Image 1 (cartoon, rainbow, N blue to C red):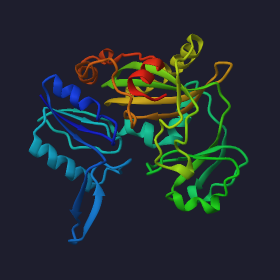
Image 2: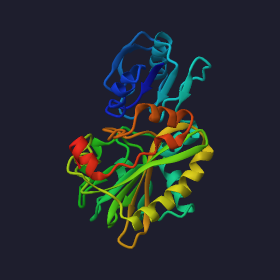
Image 3: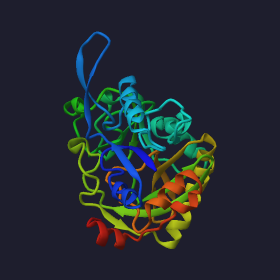
Image 4: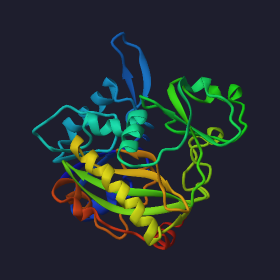
Length: 322
């Protein structure tokens, strides 16, 4: 089988040798690839073919469809949230619908829906502003784009940061600002959505999330300084209950994709909403010890094939971080 993978850099790198060893021919397009394109006025410019959080421009679509035309895949797995490819009967297509992509890109609407479904929500300190207008705060805050997909995504701002000296690091986009939380553990739910059905692959907790998302350190690896932990039984029950309520809604929006839900659990096992990503994460921890075939079948025929609860200790020993 010929399989085309489209993803952010370091997201699906691990799956290529696994699929190849199982007899497939694989091509992976990532943000590491750049192509010189010419606009309709004859001007050359550089564009990341599938760069960090791309906008799904016509140039990017044309680049990818050109590769599809020459590679002639049997399956296309598109893990770029905002890249929507034209329908084709020539291959099996796995990716987001516009509605499922909006769960990641329309953060204010998604946050509101999560609250309706029983998730607690971090306090909003500002809304209806642009990122350059965010105020200095005496506590940690998080700037989140309201209704678009920016290169920075969510940005963490340390206490007492003078935003007038930091705004140049951000695009000027519509945003809201959430106040940081005190919690016992940050929790993540990894799931596979397959055209109206879902399975939770695994859950994982973490503390000491390093410098990831910091305004002064944008682009840093989220693995730096992170401590991975297994959720306790009580934490898992509280968190998974909320995740299932969310995924019961998300499945109505269609799409066949691998995604994540992020939240936080307090000492009293209260569960707060952070975000959904309608794609697997960068620097993905991989399928340990699952198989590539299970990963692919989870997206195409049976989402339960994806289920693979991995202990934090296994990730530390096999991947060398956390």
